[in-house]
Image (cartoon, rainbow, N blue to C red; front, side, top):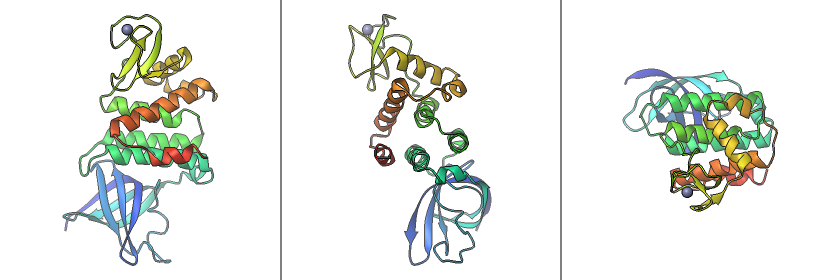
Length: 238
Ligand SMILES: [Zn+2]
């Protein structure tokens, strides 16, 4: 069997037999990987708690035909604050859920991996009302779905923008409006998120515009992956 090394973030896990678990990972170089972690559910597992969702680990894996097998896993980032705060934990899990939907098995997507690790580290370092929304917008843009934010997507005019339509992938003027309304403040914020001002935007205090950009990001992501994000529904209750 071939052995390989990689870094990865655990997206989710599920039980296998009596003591094992299948671990779904977003890796740096091998895309999404499903691997068996043997004995991980025993009290004295050699993996300890290192293969739980949100764990960022350095891995040694045996390549299998369908499932790989985890041979070693060492923690790279502890991300402890995520586990001490239910709101942040749920946002982190919402990031994992979207990446799980977007990543393809064994198709390298190092950019998506890097974006996920960067977002989890940022979320662990400091909470921000826009971190999840900004992550979704940046990921969608990286997937080639950068929304048109400057001119009306229907008529091309730069008349005041009043709406955002997911089917059309951009903003609309008053005459052409459809989809969801968007406020002037939220539009400015969204332009900044996608226009290279992310660090400054993440320091914005929570307010109606941050809520709007966040909610629109969730809808845009759900529209793209064609399903609801379960962890976001949970977030509404946190
Ligand atoms: Zn128009």
